[in-house]
Structures are given as C-alpha cells and as structure tokens.
Length: 154
Image (tube, rainbow, N blue to C red):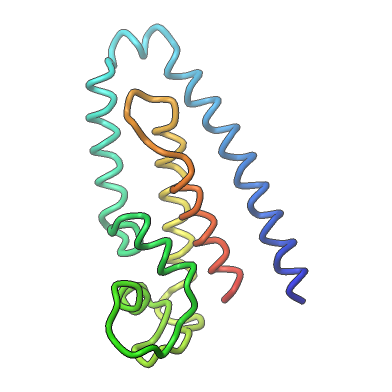
C-alpha cells in the first residue's frame, strides 16, 4: 500500500510541475509584452510582488513563518520527545500534531490548510520566477511537496 501512495505522490508532483511550467511560460510571455514593460518597471514589479506575497501569505498560519522552519515541521514525524522545540511548537500550531506528540488526523481543517498553503506558494512561485525579484525555486518546491505529501500521508 506504501507503493501506491508513493506512486500517487509522484503523479501529483508531475502534474503540479507540468502546471507550473505552463503557467510560468504564460506569465513570462505576458511580462515580455511591450505594454507591460512600458507601464511596469523592475522596481514597480518587485514592489508589487512583495505586496502580493505579503498579502497572500499572512492570512494562512502555515505560510507565515520562514519556509525552512515550516518545511522541517512538515517533514518531521510527531514525537513525544521531551522539551519544547521550534519544530514541535510549529507542528502543534499548524495542527499537525497534538501537544502529547500524537499525529492529528483530519483535525481542525488540516487538509484545507495544507492544500491552501501549497496553492498559495505555488502561485507565488509562478509569479516570482523570472522577475527582477530574487526568488528561489528549490525551497518553495520543497514546501509545496511537503504540503502535498503530508496531505497524502493523512
């Protein structure tokens, strides 16, 4: 049964990658049009992207912290290790784990939160790749994959 889940995760990742490429090509083609370049310079584009990223990241608890911390919390399993770590606090805050270290299955809209977080980062990444704004592709891809993998694991 694990092979089936890994196959589904691979298919989902391939479909997300194909959709990313299609949307990014269309977005870059729009950005290359003379009308866009005439009205939106690099400074305005970076300012607009920064505002859109902030406005779309803030409402969801999962997309507020830095990506590396969130990715670590998403990849790690719930554990009952003593002490309060950043990972365990984030896992509890996101609803991934309970305070006692148990996995939280289907609780508090966790699937909706993970799906929305993946979708938000996906569209932010589509918008920022290829712009004058220095944005990564690897870390947001890890975040999206971690959200989708956690959804399938639930």
